[in-house]
Image (cartoon, rainbow, N blue to C red; front, side):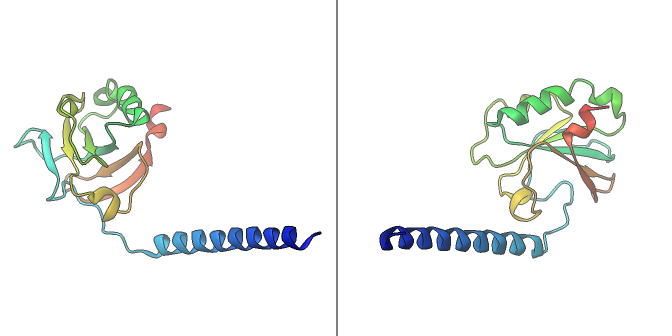
Length: 154
């Protein structure tokens, strides 16, 4: 092997190894971070369409990026049958990862729509997956998170 080729291979191998170490370090840092326990609703959320004096009940929150086709497809699949399959536990949309609120967001076919203008879902709760469903009890305490696909298979 020629000297320039050997140097190129060594540089590429070293760069790859450093990249893997950096990625692993970032992953470990994220996994070790203590995220805030989700509460519903967070004081910084902006209510777009929700009854002001609705009774407190257990509910499910679906984070939605309004510009994500997957998110909008998930809502379209879940919303029509949700009230019949989950009586007394409304499905609520939380608009995430959107600095500007789309004008049509308030007309989503769900029990309520809220906007996470301050990025609480991602930066404080540590959530990042569109299509997850976050369950809260009647007191607003976090119960758990599941994928939307779990409910689509019912």
